[in-house]
Amino acid sequence: KESNHYERNLRSDASGELLIKNAQLRHAGRYTCTAQTIVDNSSVSADLVVRGPPGPPGGVRVEDIKDTSVMLTWSSGTDNHNPISKYTIQAKNILSEEWRDVKTEPSKIEGNMERARVVDLTPWMEYEFRVIATNSLGTGEPSLPSPRIKTDGAAPNVAPSDVGGGGGSNRELIITWTPLSREYHYGNNFGYIVAFKPHGDKEWRKVTVPNPDSGRYVHKDEKMSPFTQFQVKIKAYNNKGDGPFSNTGIIYSAQDAPVSYPEDVRAIVLSSSEVEVYWKLVYLQSVEGYQVRYWRVKDKEAAAQRVQVSSAVNSTKLENLFPDTRYHVEVRAFNSAGDGPPSPHIDVTTKKAPPSQRPKIINVERSNSHFIITWDHVKPLSNESAVKGYKVYYRPNGEIEGNLLSTGQHWIRVPVPKEGEYIVEIRAHSEGGDGAMSQITIIGTAVGIAPSLLGLLLPILSILAYLEF
Image (cartoon, rainbow, N blue to C red; front, side, top):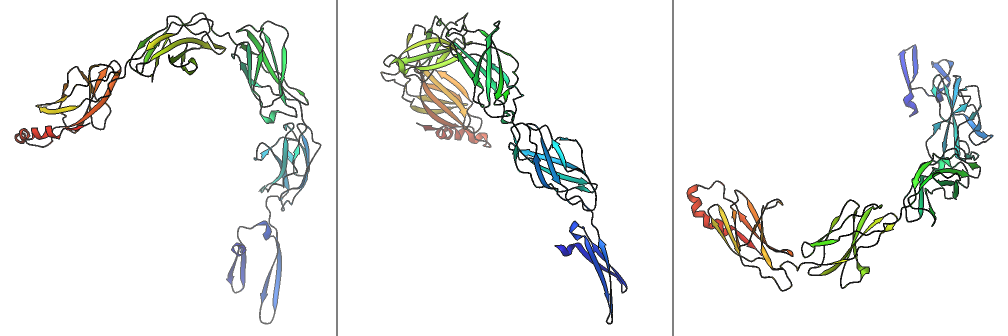
């Protein structure tokens, strides 16, 4: 609010003052004070000059556009009663919205100058420019931006980096690099020239990759020897010419796929759904891993499932198999060039399924510091594995960790919990795996009960052990 800048103070009947607070450039001008009586008046005037930072320069124009420089001209703005000491030129390009100071010739632009050359620009890049004036009281507001211009194109002067590659399929040479970003294209029709040759050859073979975003070239040659050492270098080009070559990299052509298969393939049946497969490693060849294929005898080979492991591993577990089912199993080595031949397949039959019947808990009895839990014998079906014993898992309620017990009987003794509830899980065990589970909850010794009453409560504690089927 303009009135907030002015404050009038009366010192006495004969004098006073006008105080201008936080004076702005707009407050400059002629101020008149008038004294008035009933018979006459008298006035006196004074001119107020407010000094401050310069105003924005005007008329910014771009001339003499070259690939890395332009000539900038402008007209001086108001100096606000303090001489302009210097100018600063800023620019921004289409890749960034941030205004940045730029290098100029001369490097220091005196306050009496109205033109300067901007240097070290990027070729074939769109720019806008603005000018800022400075005096001893501060830096003023920037000028309006110049019209957008594009610098002239030039041949690239930056080489691609991270030149490498190798591997690939049989009879292939893969060459890779990091593409140059847009600011280094410097012109139209940008692309890459890839040069490569076998180590020791004199002639470089060159191919053109016209895609500016590409970072990969695959050379195929049926006459190429596997795992041959190549030298490779890459440069960028555009409609103005070629850039410098990168440093020379060393890569190798693709190796041959393995020609031998793993020997001595064998399998151990672990359960109705798991089989462990073993084999001898393939040596003296480039092997990146092994693939185990397996399928049911009644299915076609196209339905085979696959498991892959690293080249240092000579076994793997096949899981989620069907119970009492015959499978074909084969193993082959592989690398980046492809798969080797398969081993002669072997046949393996999984165990029958574990018993589906749960153990039926028929009695829970408290005996001093133990509970005795009894259940009926589990009778497997004809397509299920015979029962070899029982597994009992004893754990605090709400927790996972506990004690695993085993027995060949139809009963088990577990300690009375010192406090809280414990879960007892019971299941039949067979060569096909573990069967269905029954569960019971038992309750620990009551806390704070007199010993004389504890004997009376023992039968009740046994009853509190409840069954879950």
